[in-house]
Length: 247
Image (cartoon, rainbow, N blue to C red; front, side, top):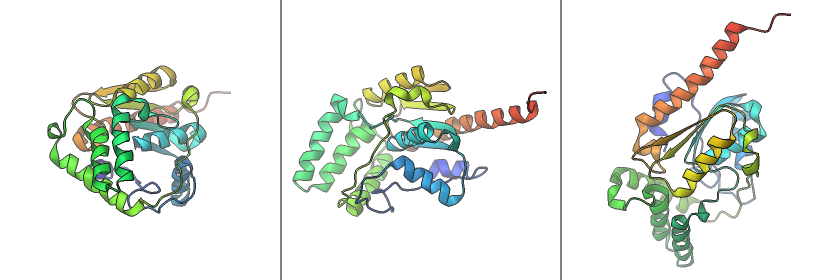
């Protein structure tokens, strides 16, 4: 899902992307785990002391958790369509309806039914029908989800999240919060809450896209990420020019 953004940024940045446990080509989780600590472990293994974290959906929650628990490891954040703390999208009526369809699909051992429900809330969103979405984007997401279900349907480990919803003001790295115009209502609410709570935050509502902005609008996604990287770089340069205070 990050192919286009990575190809853009790799021209002049070190880019690391990885599959979370029970996703893609990663291992299947059979014990409970903190995705945030997995991310820090990846950084440790690669010798990366500090990075700008770019996350979408679950990846945005993971990134926010790291920024709260390990702020010294995070230069800046870009959160695309993400919650903070344990995801609560199921509280959105539209998502709850499709979650129920997924539960029925699990009971019927209907993998494709489960995937289609995921596409309805995770790609189409509440304001579009499947025919309204770029078919290439939809089929790419279907292929990724189908492969993940096939590889990891035996997972038993739960994802654990830090409870930072009421402590969002403690997330101090510069943060860009991006929400697609066609996103579910809950994530618009979260974006507003983050804009109000975080000490250094900018919020962007991107027109004409839903949850998978990096696939629907890759050039615009790269533009937003580069702008945030530029803010961090400019701040570093300014600090170097100013130097330490005189004594």
